Image 1 (cartoon, one colour):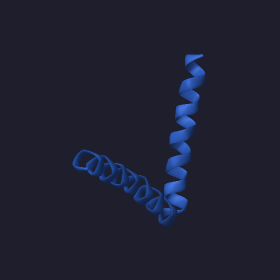
Image 2 (cartoon, helix red, strand yellow):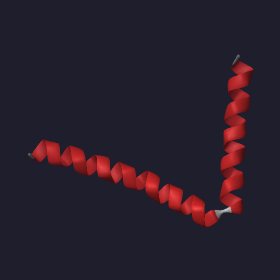
Image 3 (tube, helix red, strand yellow):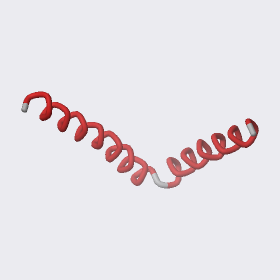
Length: 51
């Protein structure tokens, strides 16, 4: 089963690289959204700690 996990990881990385090169605008938007999520979580926990 280890080989199956390796195959899935390699395919996921290959898809990410393919997506990055074929749609750089979409990839940039996805990264911005991903990091925006962390900002929202940090704001939430800061509000909890201060409130």
